[in-house]
Each structure stands twice: as C-alpha cells, then as structure tokens.
Amino acid sequence: DGICCASGDGNYEISTRTQDNVLVVLASGGEFASSERKKFVISATTAPTPSPPTPAPINDDIGPVSLDLLVSTDLFPIETHWTLTDKTNNQIVSSLPSKSYSIQNQLYTSPIVGLHPGRTYDFTMYDDGGDGICCIWGRGNYTMKYGDRVLFSENGEFRTEESTIFQMPADNSPPATPPPTTNVPVTIEPTKAPVTPQPTNAPITPQPTNAPITRQPTKAPIAPTNAPI
Image (cartoon, rainbow, N blue to C red; front, side, top):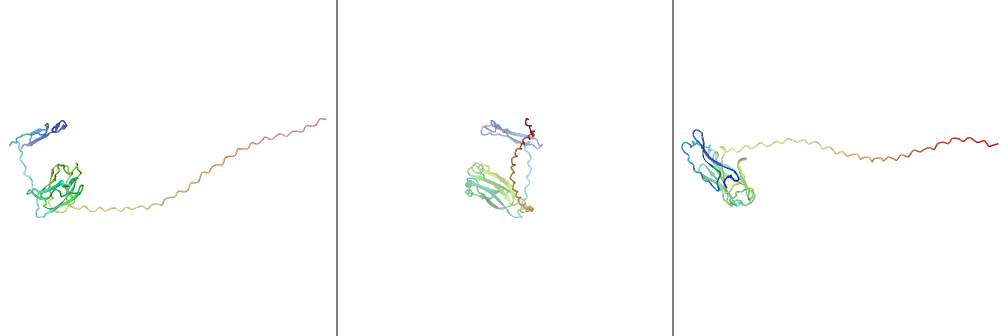
C-alpha cells in the first residue's frame, strides 16, 4: 500500500540545487503499491558543482592504535559476525567469522589493533538470520570504544547487515582519564542515649463521698402540768 495514503501521509522527494542555489525537484511520490520507479534527468544547468572533500589528516608516522569492540549477543549468537574495512584502500583490516560467538546474552570484548590515527573506517555488523541482534530474539547491541571514549554505539536493530563509518582521532594519545573524585569526609554526630520513659502512676480512684447526716430537730421542753386540786 505504499507510504501514502491508506495508513499515513508518507512521501519522498529528490531534489538538487543549481549553480545559482535554486532548488529543483527532480522526482517525488508516495502513492504506490509494492514498489515505484522514477526516472529523472540531471542536466548541466541543474547539476550542482561538487565541492572537493576535505581529506582527514593521516598520521601514519605516529603508529597504529587499537580499539575495543563490545558485543552483547542475542539468542542466536552464532549468526553474528563483522568486518572492519579501511576506507583509504578498501581493505579489510579486521574481521570475525560467524559461529565465533556461542553464548547467548553474553557480553564479548574484542580488541582491534593496527589502526591508524586520522583514517576513516567502515564497520559492518552481519546477522545470518536476517533479523539483526535485537529485538525479536533477544536484545543484543554493540559499541566501539577508543579508550574510555565511545566512537559509536548501535542498538542492534537491523536485518542482514548494518554499516557504520567513523574516523579515528588524528592522534594516538589516550583519552584523558577524569581525576578521581575526592570524597568529603562526613562527620557523624554521636548517637544520643535513648531516654527511658518514667512509669506512669496509676490513676487514683476517688473514694465515694459519704452522704451528709441529717440531724433530727431538737424537741422543745414540755412544761410540767399541775395536778388538779
């Protein structure tokens, strides 16, 4: 269904600039089925004037240096292999054949020696299974390091092969190692002795108050009665 428009609005465009810096569109598209072919002509008026590439300084007099390749394998490590090509002469300077990795989910470190400062190299990772090293059958990845410096790092998501072009540093001096961090001494305050709580006095139950005694009234004295004569 192409890249437009059933499941999105994808498109592509091929363009160039004239010598007067005018943008000229040569071909475009996006609505097709399985494939699409475009024909275009680059005339003398539309062809840009290429700038000569600036060559990187090659310091062969310094001597070769080495890199470290770190590869984390997936669940089918025997399918993984790689090559390293010197772009100066297109010669393979280092490689690892298939079936060299044999342990699943294992981190392998391979030193690569004899490289020249300032040169450009092409590193290609292959997977014979056609599903890369991540993320269908495991989570493999790989990293190229120069000392402590990471030159490139890939997550392993590709199919049959994946190439990375990189340039070696122009000198072979090892990367500066950061100074060790000085820990500031921490003064620990003395721990205070725990305070033992005093026992709580049991509450005093008040005694019931006696009811007041009601005094009987005092009888008045009775006068004596004279006897009849």
